[in-house]
Image 1 (tube, helix red, strand yellow):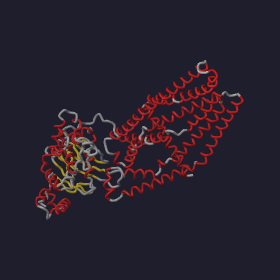
Image 2 (cartoon, one colour):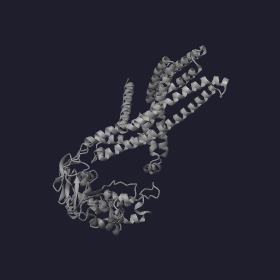
Image 3 (spheres, one colour):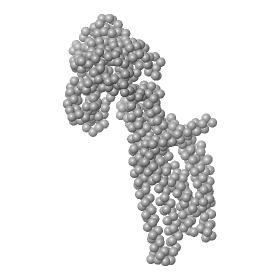
Image 4 (cartoon, helix red, strand yellow):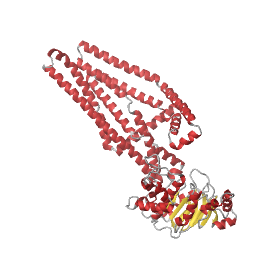
Length: 625
């Protein structure tokens, strides 16, 4: 009983998905959908005309044998042959037009749904779609639209509508000769169609766990990010064996479910076969008695065979694949709309801010998936034009601080102010243009070097002097030498997966990311956020960045997050985050002298350099430890 309820629920979900997908298609492309439906409907007419003309030809041939092609009967046969040829040409023309319409609408539907998901996701100004578990799951499901290929819905509908059109045209053909037979066979073929569709979905393994695991294991084998580890740990054989095991389970489930409807399928097949045989036997007897002309019998037999198209399942798998993601796209849109604030015409511009400072006042924040808050009454003032370093153990909330500062997340209690203005009252776009932030997990864009740096000020990428601006930003970050060594300079794509592309080392990528931040600063950003700016740099590159630190942060409100105390000590002021609050606040020398958590962490890190080459230690900035 549980299995039956599960099947009914699955069937309802599929029907709902089909209705939703068809509704989206019609609303998005009403004209093109109508044209496709009309072309599919027209596909049935040439087939029916062909059957009629073949019947007519069969009826005319005996007279031609007697009178020859020069006779009136012969001329009628020639006319019939010409008409048959014309019908075949028309049929091919309609098929070609239908194919063109299908391909065009398929591509449009692919782009339309993908664009809807992208637009919906990017319209949410914060990170709620990624931080909240339920919203993140809905986003992931909507993003899978690309994997299924929503445009396949169009191909499936085209085939399905064409099959139904030809089947119904054949039914009308049979009905003109023998209405009772056409009515009975129509009912039987529709019953068979419904059963085959239900049997197909019952056997369809796309919802089973073994197939998901098999598909996942298959993907592991050709994704470049995993290629090294699979080979180093000797997992190649294990992956192949596990894939085979999971796929065998898929096939076992497939045949198990097929056996459920085997008897019904056999019975219906026998009934429809017997019904067709009875009709043909009765028609043959009528023809032998002279009650049915040979031409009419020929048309009837062709119609009986073509009525099988009513039960055709051609295109159903494509309809299924195309419809699957549509409800998830709609759910994602509703969720995103619910959390996206309406534009506030009274929002204040953030241009020129901050002039005095940024303040966290009693800020409380907790992620939806965690019981313990990250901050519970955080108070912090960041003075404008000065550099602040934030120190803390992993999980202390350092990166969360930056997300709140940039407006990507919002506090549940308390407030964040910029020159006394609540951050919630500032125009978010304007404020983010005032902030240049490079996170530790910055993006490696597989795009030209120009874009990788210029994205810091995307509005200026189309200006005539863009290259000069990009090179100036690269120079400030020490990335100019990297650009000089690229095969085609700023035009070089930073990925080996493109012809002529070049991949960079971790330290080189970090320089490019810093250059991106400098591009934003050059465009007017007044707040510079550097999250682990030296994480991927070697000792000498790190020392070079320290030498540039004062230049990079001069005149800016700077926040630096780093585990490297050689970076932290250069800041005007240092705070220690612990337990969701500021526990220490001061300069490097003051905090070391205080003997607290900062001093302990600094001396622990400095001990690594004891006994090493003095120059290395000096470059690391810990000689005073």
